[in-house]
Length: 518
Image (tube, rainbow, N blue to C red):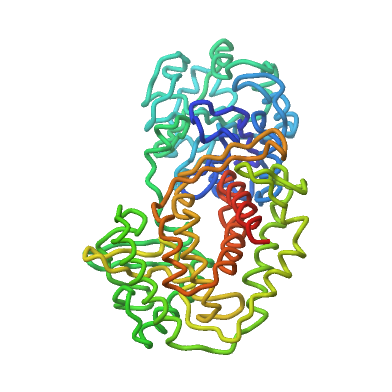
């Protein structure tokens, strides 16, 4: 039907407030994916011409890192929704149909456009006898049907009147680029269409979502699952199923971990009813960071949690694998960082000021980090959880902690690993406030240069006052855990690839903590 899609992604996204302070609107994540990447996922085989303007260098570098579709970027030279369209259509071959769409539209999975098939349920038939513009050219306009729009299209006429059932959503399909041959470089596209008297056949976009204003975005619930798994709850039973190959790969490891934990009679985990699919007890309670506990209550929770982990660690040991240690702590971290070196502001600077502290850039000091990590001696691996942040810990209604979502591997080793890995992940939540960062409850201000640097502020989990008690109860070496804590932040960067601010924030926070110990 069509092979080309022009995406108008040049807008500043002013109505999205703080979300577009450091990145363009098209990169704001919705359900663990940047807005524009929903379009890539829906049409992976199309050719995209993307109009960029606001934060265009950020957009270009991000696309270089993570886009896996055929794309070209053109820079807008004017203003308004017409800006850049003239340049974009130069990249569309003659006599080729193409879509023009706003970057903040997320089409429903079930949406299909069959174009000339006027009997399709999505397409409103029109009277060919009228020989209107749509009948002659075969151009189509997407009608909202489910969200309000500032412009309406009704009875072949545009009017600047708010509408849902006749709203102009920002989706057009043109039979070829001749329809836009005289489009101005600046101005409002729909107003220009109105002035031209353009007519279209209509396509219902029912089920499409638009995220043009902050209030709509903040109504989204924070997802508790990754894109590769699905959770359903039936009464007191939770079922966790994979939805793709990556999900199945991780699910296999998770099932193996729970099977081993049951074999070892590990306490502090949910009751497991079935392994494949994974069916378990629903934990009635809260995440630890949501409890609002006082100092004494937190101490008791931490003590019980450390006891559970120590019993886990002592349930079985195997000889340590030095290759897994190198992989988990250094190779994985540097491999992830290498993918984003060109994306990060000041990534090529030797020093970066973070929250007032001048920090060495790990890209220039990787050998020093490698040597520091080589000083971590480990003769035995033990049975570990692998990801015991507060996000993967629940408190039952009676206040007892429960471990969920085990990682199930360390480096190249399944089930077993360095116990310091567990302690570092727990410290990550206590001192680093990882969980609030993961929920995007942070602000990041990026200065004009590396000396001005960045300011990162993460909402507190409310557990920083337990740092000394953490080291007292675990017996872990303070310097070693702080080193691994810094590495954990650095390693988070591309794991959090869906959000530009999270990538940058994790990197800068890693540098901040690394400067304390390197």
